Length: 265
Image 1 (cartoon, rainbow, N blue to C red):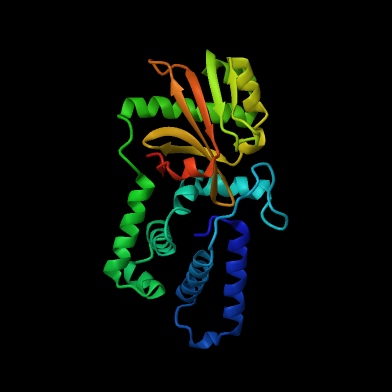
Image 2 (cartoon, rainbow, N blue to C red):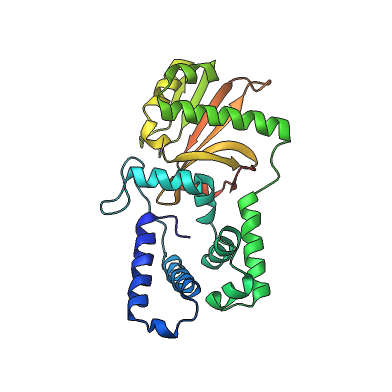
């Protein structure tokens, strides 16, 4: 619901305090009551986010979830889904997560959002379209590129230089904008070994990175505290057997213009 373990812990703590103060003898269905309280606390937290945090790429804020917990959340929920959820309105996010993830009926969600069940159904439908995104590439191309992107991520996470070199064309070129490092100017690397060694240096980031669709094409996105931080898009040889180019984007304005969606199963 929140995309942040630290905020989730705050929500559970608040729900526990409310439960402790309540007369539980008057609560007919404790599970449903707790679901309602937690959902309302999450909704208030989502509405209170007046600005998007600009988190550092290499460090996490003191006092919040560390890299291990962030990586676990990314693996369990999926980085792409966390990123897409962060683009939804609070009401869309609550409606989608409660209904599509936890199978809560629309008529039970409606009172939480002060909407009719029909309006909540529309909210969830809009959110679902955002999660699915634009029509992806035809199936064979989508599958082939998805496998290449997954292999690139797996080799980077595992520190397998030889596996990376096998995926890259000899004359592969990597472009990274100035916000990635950050540096005063964009960075360009040429050649399979230079690009592979650069990927090895980003192993810690790879743990918070996952596959996604960017404008209908398989790519990689990185999320810190449930918020989009980085995108890697790829170009391939005509037969799809090697990666010929990698574009690494961290500029906020450019990220905002991308349509990000969850890869189909």
